[in-house]
Image 1: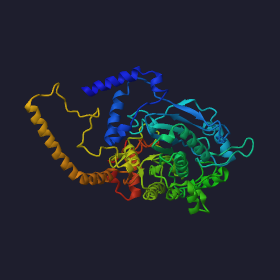
Image 2: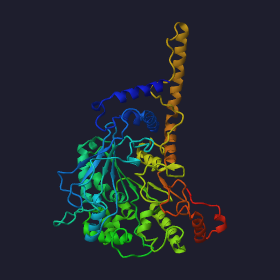
Image 3: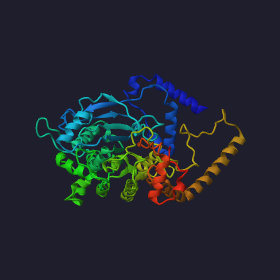
Length: 521
C-alpha cells in the first residue's frame, strides 16, 4: 500500500514538473543507486518505470538533429554529416548507433543510388527530429534494459560501409568519408557529456554493423585518449557477412547483384578506406577481406557482441540463391543444400567469437525492430544476453536475472518490517533489546564465516548462468519458433512442401515430416 502511495506521489511530481524542471526532451532519471543494487535494482527500476510510464508527458521524447557544420567531413554530396541525439542526464550509459543501407561501388551505381536513395547520400532533407524503436526506444516494455540510456543515431550518408576517407576530387564527384564522420561524431559527443559516462556501446545494423567492426578500436582510442574512464564496447547486428562463393554468379553492377567479394573489391578502389592496421597486416594482399566479420574479428582489441541470423536474408540475396527461381516452393535440391551449408558455414565462423547470439532465422537486422527482445535461444532472449554480456565484468548480472532469490530489496531503501506506532516500555522492552543484540552478534559471526564461501559460490553461479555465447543447433532455416515472420512471401502456403522437400535433401523419411510445420505457419 505504501509503495502505491509512493508511485502516486511520483506521478504528481512528474505531472506538475514544468519544462524547466524536466529539461527539454530529456529523461531526468538518476540510476546510480539502483546500479549499486545490481540486477535487482534494474528490475526495481523497470517496475517503477512501467508503473509510472503513463504519468506526465505522453509524447515520446524525440531525437534532435545535430549537423557537423564546422567540420570538413561530409556526406556523399558534400552536405554536412551529423547525428541525432536524445540525452538522459541521469544515466551514465551511452548508445551510439550506426545505421546501415548497403553501399555503392562506382560512379554509375552511386549516381543511381543518389536518384533513388538520396537520404543515404545527403543530409539536405533530414528532418529536425526523429523517433526510434527497438533498442533505441524509451519504452521499457519494448526496451527493458536500455530505455534510460543516452541515445545517439548516426545516419548513414557515406555509402561505404562506414570505411571511407576520401574527399570529392572534383565538382560533381562524390565523397566517401564514413570512417572520418564517426571520428568527428565521437569527438563532439565527448564535449556534450560522453566524457562523464561510464560506458559507451557502439552499435550498428547491416552496413552499420560492418562499420562497427571496422571502426570500433579507432573509436575506443579516441575516447580513451580524452576520457580514459569511459569503457567502450561494440554490438554488431547483421554485419557479419561471409566472403563465400555465391550460389550463382551474376554480372556485378551494384551492391545487390555483385557477389559478396566482388562488390567490396570494386568498392575499395573508389572509397579509399581506413581499415584496422592489424587486419591489413593479416591480409596484406587481400585487404578487402577486412570487411568480413570472421576475418577482421581476430584483430579486434575492444570487446564486441555479434548478433547474426544463421540464414541472413542479405547474405542469401548477394549469394544469388533465388536467381531465376521463385521463392520457397520452387527451390531445387541444390538450392536447399546451398542454404543448409550456408547455415553451417555461418555457425563455423561464429564459434570462436567470445559473445554471440545466432538464431536459425531467415531474417536480417533486428536491433531496431520493436520485437527485437523476443527472439530467444535456449530460453535466453537477445535482450537478456546482450545485457548479461555488457555487465559481465562487474559480475553483477546473470542474463537479466537476479543473482539471488533469497535477498529482498526494500522499495524505499529501508527495512520494510512494519513499525509499531509506539515502542513498548519497561523491563520487557529492555529484555527484548538485549535478546535481539545477542541474536545479531550470532548472525554476524555466521555471515563472516560463510562470506568467503558465498562470494565464490555467487561468482560461479554468475558465470554458469550468464549466457552470452548462444548459437542455434536446430538443423534448418526458421526452425527456431521465436524467429520473426520469414520474409519469403509464399512460406505460409508452402509449409508442407517446404518440410517434405527439405526432408528429401536431408535424407529424412518425408512421412516423418507430414505433420511438421514451419514455426509460425
